[in-house]
Amino acid sequence: MAIRGNRILSDSGRCNDRLVTNGQPESGQVQGQLRRRLAATFLLWFGLLPALTGAAEPDFSGVWLMIQHSRPGGAFFIPVEPPLTEHGKALTSAFAAKYDVVTLEANAHCVEPGMPTLMWGIGSSAMEIVQQPKRITVLSELANQSRRIYLDGRAMPDDFPDQRVGYSVGHWEGETLVVETQRITEWHAPRWPHSDQFSVVERWSLQDPAKIDLIGLRRGGPRPKVDGPVLVVEMVMRDPVFYANEEEAVTVIYRRDPTGALFEDNCSEYIWLEKLERDAQQRAAKR
Image (cartoon, rainbow, N blue to C red; front, side, top):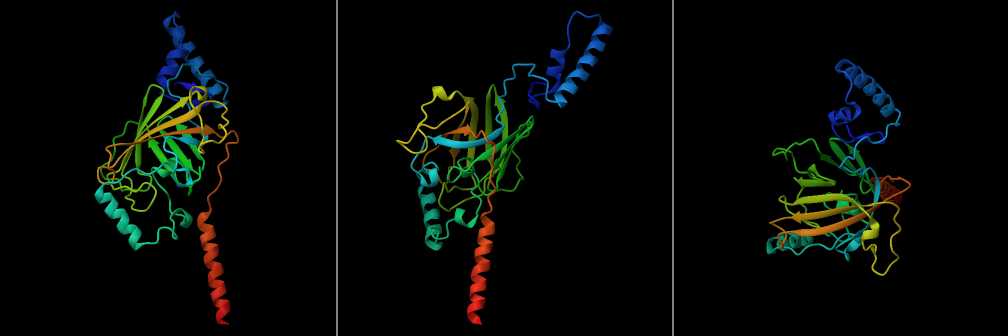
């Protein structure tokens, strides 16, 4: 198993091959292999075993903050929305005509943003990546949403219900993680509306910030301060029903938060408290 710190990044066979020394007599080799396995297990449990292989898969673990993307100008620092088809325009216009989506803005009423907005964070909310050999979990500070990216070779399911974050499967191409997400709930409100045929393909990689032109989320602002590699996520979104173009691309850059802090989003608590206060005032007025 390729090990980085105390994280197992691939199967155990590779690690065992590295631990066995060649040239021993057959019985001595077996005994030596057993001793080394026991020693490696002990060191792994106590976090003392360094990486034994040059594993291709990087470690994305940590709390990340979006510091830049390739489509500036959208509200709350999210990328500018794509041009819509005539059908997409008709559906979103009908929704906006029927409902007051400005006063009753979704995020202000604790509606989960789902994909793709979860990856941008409205107002640049942080996200935590928890990496395991067969699954990556993304925990968003925004509405406490989570994504599960399965790396165990499974296919995209046909019978899984649509949900705001969709269903994600991924695989490694060298040092790049390729993620495909489908089964995302249809959305007619502002902020990247889409049909139930909406899909996202992402390519995640760690890159040297010195080789990237970092300008931040505000044009003309100070260059973002970055310590260590940045996470670059190249997103390609497709929706033959809603989007006028065949593909809509966004490249997002994140920096690690050295504090590792992720705040709780207790939006629904405030809505409840406001409702309690209004109810109390109404009851008091009737006395």
